[in-house]
Length: 112
Image (cartoon, rainbow, N blue to C red):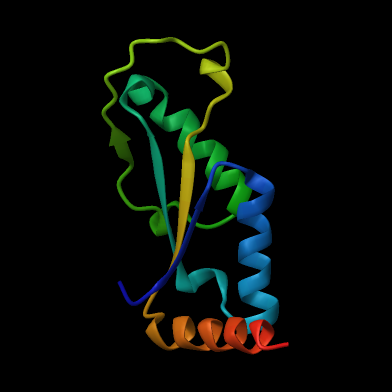
């Protein structure tokens, strides 16, 4: 696809990506959308998971799209069940030109 997006489970990586977009490319928080991806076994924790990511990015809940619940064949219950918050996808709206700019920066760095 033509846009810019980043997914990660680490809140610090998410915050870094948002700051990087702001400081390097002038992207404001309101130009972003967010989508949580988490295993379907956490469906009853959806509100808690959303609140976790909301606190990480400090964006209005209106910028969050529908949670993506992932089906898994594994029935294993992990020890970190209550502290697992899945991944957050950060997507820049209308970002085809931004993607070209980032790819140009990468090519410029690679040629050094």
